[in-house]
Structures are given as C-alpha cells and as structure tokens.
Length: 379
Ligand SMILES: Nc1ncnc2c1ncn2[C@@H]1O[C@H](COP(=O)(O)OP(=O)(O)O)[C@@H](O)[C@H]1O
Ligand SMILES: [Mg+2]
Image 1: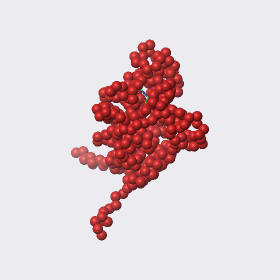
Image 2 (image 1 turned 45 degrees about the vertical axis):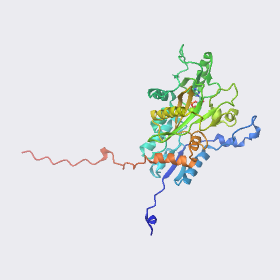
Image 3 (image 1 turned 120 degrees about the horizontal axis):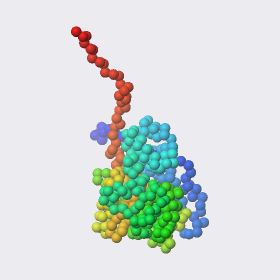
C-alpha cells in the first residue's frame, strides 16, 4: 500500500442550506406572462428563477465544490429547525432565513437558535441582523464610528417639526424595512410642501420613517467579505441614464424586483465601477469601516453614494442576495471567482468558527448533593 492509500479519508464538510419559504412564489406566476405582451421591449429576462430554485442552485453549487449539501425549508416549523440543530447537525448552516412566522424580525431569533445549539452558520450574528433591520439605529452606529452617512431625521409618528433641519431634496424611506420596500418614484421629495403628505403615506404602510438628505451622486454597491481581515470586492456601479427624465435615479422596489415594470429594464450595472485609484481606496476604507462598525461577518453589502469625492453609506446589508450575476456575485465574478468558488469561500469562513458543542450537563440543582461530613459527637 502506498502512503496515499493509508491516509484517512477526510470527511466532507456537511452543509444545510436553510431557508424559509411559505406560500406562493410570485415569480412562478410570472411564467404565465408572455414577454411579447409587454408594452416595452424587455432588456432582461422576464422569467426569473423562483426563490426555491435559487436555493437549489446553491446546493448544487456546493456539491460541485465537494461539500455534502442539502436544502431544508424550515417554513414555520420549529420542530424541523430543532431536528436540523440536534439530530442531523451539519458542520455549517448556510443561513438564508429571512423570516419566521412571516415576521422579518424573527430572523434574529433563528440565528440565535444556531448560537444556542452551537452550530456554525454563515453571515451575521443576531446582533448584526437585528441592528441592520433598524436603519436609523444603524446610521447612529455608523456616525459614532466616523463613517459618513447622509444626514437624517427619524420619526416614530407622522408629525414633522416646523424646521426640519435637513437640506432638500430628501428621500423618505421606511426606517424598519429593507430590500427597497416602500421606495418608489415619489420617495424623493424636492418640494418641502409635499413632505408631510409623503411621510404620512409611508407611515400608514410601514410605521417609523426615515427622512434623509438625498445624495444626487453615483451609486455603488460595495461587497465586503471575510473576517481576518475583511476584504472589499470590486464595486458595482448603477447606471441610471436610461431612466425617463421624470423618474428619480434610485433603485426603487419595482426597479429591483419587478420584471414587468419598465424601470426594471432601464437600470444597468457596471462592474468594476470605473473609479480612480484614490477614490477606490476611499470607498474601501468607508465600506470596511461600516462592515466593522456593524460587526458584520463573512459577507455583506454596503449601499453607498458618492457626493463629490466623499462616499456616504446609505445602508448595511448583512447576508445580502447571492443570485448569480447580481450585486454580491457580480462583484465576486469581477474579482475572478466563479459562483461556486465564492459560495465555497463563504462556507469556509463559517466553518472556521466550528466548535465542538459543550456536552450537556445536568442543571446544578439536579445534581446529587455532596455527602456532608459526619458531625463529631459533642464531648
Ligand atoms: N440618501 C439617499 N440619497 C440618494 N439615494 C438614496 C438615498 N437613500 C436611498 N436611496 C436610493 O434608494 C435605494 C434604496 O434605499 P436603501 O437605503 O438602500 O434601502 P433598501 O435597499 O433597504 O430599500 C438606494 O439603492 C438608492 O438608490
Ligand atoms: Mg439598499
């Protein structure tokens, strides 16, 4: 027998790609739409992958890289989640859970379960996930760390002070939502007279409101990954020049998610963003400072705008979208990594934190009492 045959076979790292999908998938219904029937010429495919298909693609990719991977849709089933964490513990959970009981805030609790059961998982901790769901709080943390972010006011009620103290134009966003929810054509307010009306409108649907100075400059999505130390990938720049004149140059909900909307086909990306070397260094310093300030891990995306030579962080996205060719993955590919290599790197960042779970100990009050020493007889 030669030496190679003697070597024990290294067990493959096992990965559960964990997600939560309940109900219908709108993208599935889109398949019934004939792209020819649209009133415009679509630039990008109208039939896009469903959420579940995307997760299955991640599993196939991890298998190609040599991991033992399977997908688990946790739905709203806590028992199923516990089975993954107790009986069929993987080495790593690829955490794609963004909801539980239809509540995005419970993604924090799900990540907390991984910690309690001591299973390594990809991406943000409960702290980071919770913090970044609160846009106003995140911005305060960024400010405390000296990371530039547009000036803003946070309102818990739709009542505006006489003097707003911000320079117009402003953008009105839900303070507690992400993924461009509540951002549309009318989000940018140029006329102070129209602000109250817009604030009321956003409040009705989403609650707390963020009013932020609108930055007219270029928009970059900057992906950062790794831990010791984190690294920036080549930024993606958004080209808004094909939008109609009356549409603000922003990534609205429709532009991001709705292939039936014309704006979805009018925003293009360039990666790597054409930036001078000093500008790239500046963007990198700001992006990494934002990643560190919010204690991101493994991978994240910072949405940034440039005002003159100064980058401003709009928001921090821990566990960002990993669709092939989009945002994070567009940057990874520009750095020369394939989809498979990029996903494998993310798993390996998490696997480096793998630790043996603490053996279960009976609680102290169940333990037998120590034997009392015999009390000597009185003399
Ligand atoms: N202060 C701002 N200045 C300019 N554009 C903004 C500003 N805030 C948000 N936007 C635009 O709105 C989009 C969505 O806002 P963002 O803060 O990234 O929240 P989310 O992506 O969670 O909805 C951004 O990608 C950008 O196009
Ligand atoms: Mg964003």
